[in-house]
Structures are given as structure tokens and as C-alpha cells.
Image 1: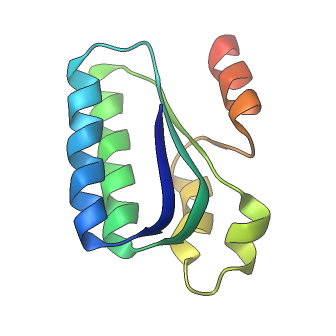
Image 2: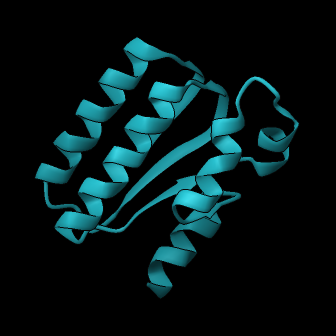
Length: 104
């Protein structure tokens, strides 16, 4: 699991993308990206998550995100969080993400 907190700007996005690549090379059964504590997901952070999702799809590793959708919808500064719901499987909590992956 990867947890991102606070503001995910350009430098953070580069580190996030590298971390996702590193996790994919470990042949994990699934990856959860916990964005529930993100205040702002910048455009490059959004792109890093989507590129990680694309790479996960290519390797057959399920990748889901935990997003506080109530906060995302209310955040005018971070429309990317709400957009993730249309781009990948998202869950409102870690428990629901784990349950969703278990049903898999």
C-alpha cells in the first residue's frame, strides 16, 4: 500500500511514479494507493497515479485507490481526485478497498 498525504505536487509525483514502478517489480498481488489524506493532487500527481494504473494493468496487478470522495468533490483546488473515480477503481475507505480486492 502507498499512502499519499497533504499536497502532491510535481516533485512528489515523480517519487510516487517511481514508487509504483518499484512495487510493480516486486510482483505483489495488488496495490492500494491511499489518497484519503491528500489535500491537493496536482495534475502531475494525477498523471502519476494513472500511469501507475496503466502499468499495473499491463502486468495484471490490480491497483485501486482510496479516495475521500466527499472531500474531493468539495475541493475546487483538486478536481483530479474526483476525476480518479472515472479513471480507476476507487473506494471510500481502506476496509472497502481490501474487501473489493478480496472479491476480485
